Each structure stands twice: as C-alpha cells, then as structure tokens.
Image 1 (cartoon, rainbow, N blue to C red):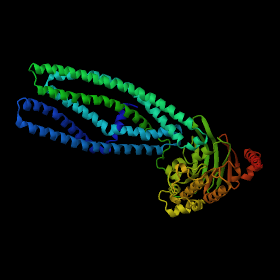
Image 2: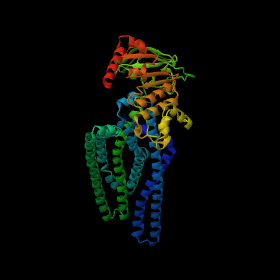
Image 3: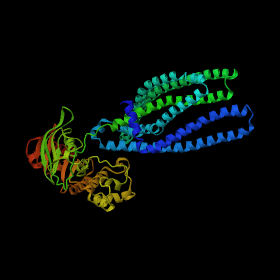
Image 4: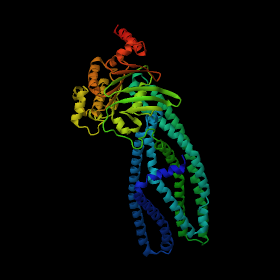
Length: 582
C-alpha cells in the first residue's frame, strides 16, 4: 500500500478527537518553547549577571528559571495524560472497527487465514499503532517546529556558527532515507514471523488435549522453537541496521558539535563573541540536534507503524463477499418452504462442488441428507444459511430468493445443531441464551427442560451459573450437545439444520438427545445430515448426494426398495452392525 495513503488513513482516526489532539499539540509546543528559554536566560546570566557581578539580578533570574522548570513540568504532566487518553481511545476505536469488520466477512476469508494471524492483527499490530497515532504524529510536527525556531535563534545569535551547525544535516537526511529503505522490508519479515508464531499458539493451546493424547508435546515445542528462531533471525537483522544507524548518527552530530565549539572558542578568545553567547549557542545546538535525531528515530517508528498499518488495513479493505441487497426484505411471517432451483456452486472457479441441485422442502418436512464424505451435504446447508452465494440458480425461502432477504433476518430463521457443538467460555445460561440476547431465566430453563438438559444442569456445582470452560470442555459430549439443542430451542427457528447430532454418544444419552430433537423438529422444516441411515426412517424425504449431484431422492422405504446408492449404503451399515455385535 502507498505510504501516503496509509498515513492519511491513520490520521483519520484522530478525527473524533481533533479538539483534544490540537490541545495536546499546543501544550507540546508550549513545552518546547519553555525548554528553549533557559538557554537564552543562561546567556543573560553569564553576560549580564556573573561577569559584571550584578548581585541584584541574580536571585530574580534564578527564580525565573525555577518558574520555567515548574511550568514545564506541569505542562508535561497534563500533556502526557492527554496523549495517553487519545492513544487509548484511538486503539479502542480501531480494534472495535477491525473486529466488527471481521464479523461481516464470509467464511471464505477465515478459511484462507490462520486464526493466529488474524489475532495478531487485532492485538499486536493495533497496539503498535497506538503510540504513532496518538503521540508520534505530534512529535514529528513539534520536532520540526522546534528545529525551525532554534534555527532562527542560532542565526540571530551568530550566522557563521549557525551555518557550521547545519553542516551534518544533509548527511543525516541521506542516512535516514537509506535506513528507511533498508528497514521496511525487514520489519515486514519480522511481522510475518510473529504472526506465524501466534498461529502456532492458536493451534496448539485449543488442541492441547489432542497434543497430550498423542504424546506430541516435544513436537509442538519444536514447532514453536523453530518459529521463534525464524523470528529471532529477522529481529537480529533489524537490530543490526538499528545498531549501525544510530551510532553513526551520533558520531555525525558529535563531529559537528566539535567544529562549532572549536570555532566558537576562537571567537570568544579573540573578543568577537561573549562567553554567554557561546554557552547559549552550545545549549541550543544540542537542543537542535536532539529533535533532528528524534526525527531520524521517528523514521524507525514510522516503519513500524506503516508495517502494522498495512496488515490492519488489509483486513479493513477486504470487502465482505456477502452483503444485503438494496431494499433487503424481512418477511412478516416465515412458513419454512425451501426450494433449490438449478443450483450450481464452486469454491474455486471451474471446479463445481454442487451441480444441478433441484428439490423442494415443504414447511414442517424433515429432509435427510446422506452420501459419501465430500458429496456436498455440508455445502448445501451452508448455501441455505448463505455463508456462500450460489454461482448459478436460486435458493428460495417462501418464494423469495435468499439473496433478497436481510442476512441477519435469514440467519435468525435458521437453527443449527452440530455433531461437535461449540460452546463459548462462559456459563451454561449464557451459552443457552446466546442466540436470544434478552432471554429471561424462565425461558432458558424451559428450553433446557425441552432439551433434556435441566436435570444435569441443576446438579452442576453452580447450576446454570456454572462456567463450562474453553469450548465447553468441562461438560461431557452428550451434555454439550443437549446445551446446544437448548440453544436452538430457545431461538425458535423456522428452519433447522442437524449435522449428525446423535453420533459419538452412549445409547442412553442418544435416547435423551433424540427425544429432545423430536421436540425440536416439530413443525419446523428440518435438514438432517446423517451417516447412520437408521436415524432417517421417519424423514419426509431423503436426498442422496454423490459427486455434488442428487443421485436419488425419496422416502426411506422407497429408496430401500430400489437398487441404488442408498440401498447399498443401508446394507453395508447393517453388515457392519453385525460385525460390531459379534
């Protein structure tokens, strides 16, 4: 991204706080001006007080200097708080904006990015921008202002000495430019390695049970060590450039100061300049070189900020693939009639995952989806939820194309119960009420009872206020499943998607879950993805998927009487059941 564009975008975040930012800038200018006064007063002290032994003016001048130091300290305290206040608010705004934008992006974006990389942008990169946005920009302006004021004071005091003071500036400017060109790509590599390191943590920590179950602790440690070594190499490359640049910078300014001090001393000894002027000149000279050095150092911080800004704005500039159409609809009432009409879909251009999908689900019907892995069953229900848009054809809800409906409205009508339910780190009550923000305790309890979850919940250490742990790991698989069913019941959707909701549990728990599901599917249009075909005996219609197409469609008995894929799958499962029983 162009640096000018990045800077404009960064500065725009100060817009809501421009009055406070301007106040902080003015305080910084006042602080800088007060910092320049002691140099002039030192000249007065030497030439007008010490040399002529003017005792009457000594104490008044010293008290004046004390007042300046006190005022500068007070302004510094206020300015520091204002800068921190602005920085905290800007970071808050940016983090919220990035996270809100992430919520609008489609599943395709998250499938292409590692969780750790996304986390790194929301946390590390935004934190690195805090100083630059809130204080760095003002420091650049103030240092430029200070350099100009000191230049005027130096030339007024002694033009020749002032010209000698400026001798190192071209070399400093050139070295700063070269340093920026060299360090920017190095910082890019540092940030990529850091994001890669975060990605390893984001994978390993949530999967710690799998790591320990397969005794792969050493392997994960090696992975982290390898990524850390890669980061270390790039950080050392940056450190080499940093270590080379600033000592050379300091050497240049020191050489300039020696030239000025030598020539100024000769001027004093020959009577062309007073000692007070030389002392003032030396003080101002170092105050001149300091902001120049800070401007050079700011180049380093700017490179930090621009690198982080690129990563943050890459997220913000990613356009959501799915948006509400102009005049998107919210139906006054949803019956639940779903129609797939000539649907074609592909994740990658030219590689269809679904082709020629045509069927109708009437309100209240249970539609079974079966077929081999990779046949397109999950993709089909993802399209219904509009996680992706079809390439061709239409998906209709009560006669309306889902692309014409409000996304929020559409997904409010669809409840999902997954094979591996995801619970958030929070209480049981919070997880059940996740889909209904203002759910009352009585409604949550009623949903839990309908899901056959109330009895085990009240026996938890803190009942409905029990924290379920990361991803619900403190509950058993069957308990997590019943909590997720209660969550769907409370949401009261018109369309329900079940993804093998009774697998991987014991027989007694399966019976409890099945009873809860029977209550849940009542009077709702239901799409049930199933691998155990016996669970679809009561389905209104079964759709058999193969290679992204509908291979067969009918009731359980109709398909069983035929000699198609469904019949063969049923016979195969029956034989496997006999083997397990034996």
